[in-house]
Structure formats: structure tokens, C-alpha cells
Image (cartoon, rainbow, N blue to C red; front, top):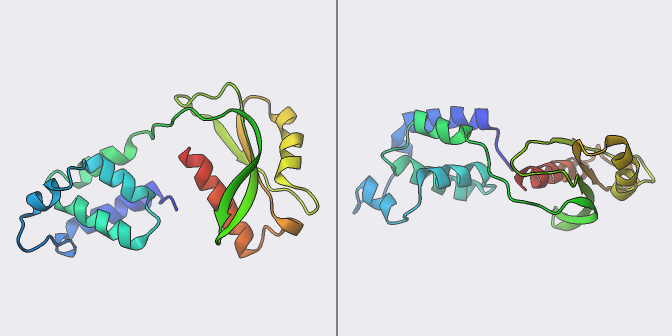
Length: 180
């Protein structure tokens, strides 16, 4: 799940202040250990922010700590850079799929034709009531919202948004749309 940038900054400050938490192979110097991977500080930090696996995140953090240019200031600058987005399909997309707890779940998405990756656009995540679907809500809300919003409407049976599954579905859809 995408980590909160503010919390990540605090974490990085704490972890960079205690370099003993990171260790390189004994036969290599820190800079030699990192140079073999050939990856930039920026790419490692961005991958760390997006990483879901705690084990992989720890490996990335160790790589970041091995870099001589990794400090609070440089990491803060990287974290403040806007995320570049690529062009995405526009219009109504009523049958999108996402995995939640190992099961395919459905959500509907609307991206206005005026969407541009270079221009921020407001986002609404709409939860339907019992007896409806995300697709039905997409049909109801597109005419009301016009071209000003990206709209995502996940579907869950019996309107069970209060369940753990419902919460995870909402968070996964939010993450999916944010990263695209």
C-alpha cells in the first residue's frame, strides 16, 4: 500500500540517523555494494514508497542507506517531486477488475475525456447502497459531475462496506487509481 509521504520522511530521518541498521556485505565497501546494482537514489526511494512487501522494503532501505548521497535533504527533495503519470484510457470503464484477498473484485471507473496526465484532477470514490453496483452508480454520477472529476465506484454485495473486505476493496481501488 502506498505509504504516507510525511510518515516516510520521518522514518527516513530516523533510519538515516542510525546507519548501523543497514549493513553491506563484509567483503565490499558501502559504495561498491551499491554501485553493482546501478540504480539511482531517486528510483530506489520511489520503489521503496510503493513497495508492499516488508522484506523487499527493508532490502530497498538498506540499498538507500548504502548510497553516499542518501541524506535527509536529498530524500526529501525526491519525495516532493510530482509523480509522472502516463496517458490512460478515458471515458466510462464499467468493468474494471482488482484483486482483494485473492479474489477478483469489480469496480467502475470514469476518466473524463478532458483528462491530461500533466494536469491534476479531483477524484471521487463513490460507495453504492445495497442492491446497486458500482456500474449503476457510475451511470448516475457521470451526468451530475461532468468533466471535472475522476470517479471510481467499487462494487460489493449487500452494501457491506463496513466489513474488512469492503474496507480493503476501497483502499485497493484508491491505490490503483492514484498510481495510474
